[in-house]
Length: 404
Ligand SMILES: Cc1cc2nc3c(=O)[nH]c(=O)nc-3n(C[C@H](O)[C@H](O)[C@H](O)COP(=O)(O)OP(=O)(O)OC[C@H]3O[C@@H](n4cnc5c(N)ncnc54)[C@H](O)[C@@H]3O)c2cc1C
Image (cartoon, rainbow, N blue to C red; front, side):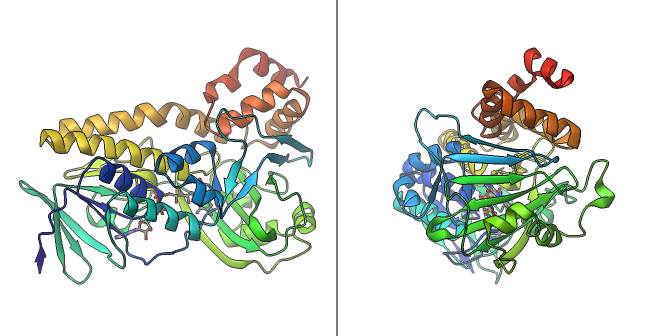
């Protein structure tokens, strides 16, 4: 069967990246079809934390009020250093928002997909893409089951599921991933507006988290990279790392001793943006499918949304010019690099230095406790609203080196 539905763009994958791309394309009058292999609302294994940057794009999509209604506002953050030192601070003020948010992906992704539909996108759920074939007159997309659809361009937004990218020969082998697992606690007994990051009792680079949700629930998780000097001491699996984390005394206290979390799931995080393919003939690649997850914090919702918006802009230009060639595609890849590569390099550097060696992280968090300016830099850099290079300011390096 060959369906000529008359779409300009087919977006494959209705996570944050795909829904943002589809929403902004449809707003520009582009005939857009959004496909997902699942049916919504669908879960996505995640920490559920939504940064200021993500909130900005969600607001641009017209969905922020709806997301706020299902989210927990977060105003404070607590870090626990490898030596057990606890540092708690309010999040630095933001020009536009007075809190970040934590919202279950089950609801967040449903609302983002609805925003894309409200903008005029056509949606097909339960539509797994088997392959696509670029040609002179556009791209033919084949669904599992054999149905064929046509468009002038596809946007690949398939997240960390690399099956389609591998079948297309875009990603020959699985790149370095962070391994992480999360579950839901039912009765949080800690501050419901404070997120917790633990670096104690872990083989770094790794961390555990407790992120409060509405109705006294919490998203609890742990993640690690199997790299660095302590890789042999790391847990065998992400689920094991989460099971170990639940026995951290601070977490036991925060969860009232609950160790049987609901919906425990693990999933990899692709953090290979700098080397990852960002386009292919007939296609632009967005979000985690392009390796776009912060290699230090594991945040990917904001990068997914921003890259979706960027791809919509470039796709519109390609459609207007009727030019889908390598030069235009490379322009999109360069725009992605310009937007993300600098901070990405620094975050990877901090992961491999400050956040890998316990003594360095102890010093950094001790300095953050003493020096509000350093803490604010650290938080704003982690939140992606300050150039992370500023953490390497000589006055901070000097104090870190001297441990004063
Ligand atoms: C344990 C864990 C914790 C995390 N915590 C956070 C956090 O707190 N904050 C944060 O910002 N990020 C976090 N992340 C990262 C974040 O979840 C992802 O980076 C983000 O979901 C990427 O969005 P995306 O739209 O690119 O892909 P996804 O959200 O993965 O969406 C991809 C979509 O594509 C669909 N799809 C895949 N293949 C096909 C196909 N062949 N045909 C049709 N559809 C297909 C899937 O069904 C899915 O709906 C975490 C990740 C993990 C694993």
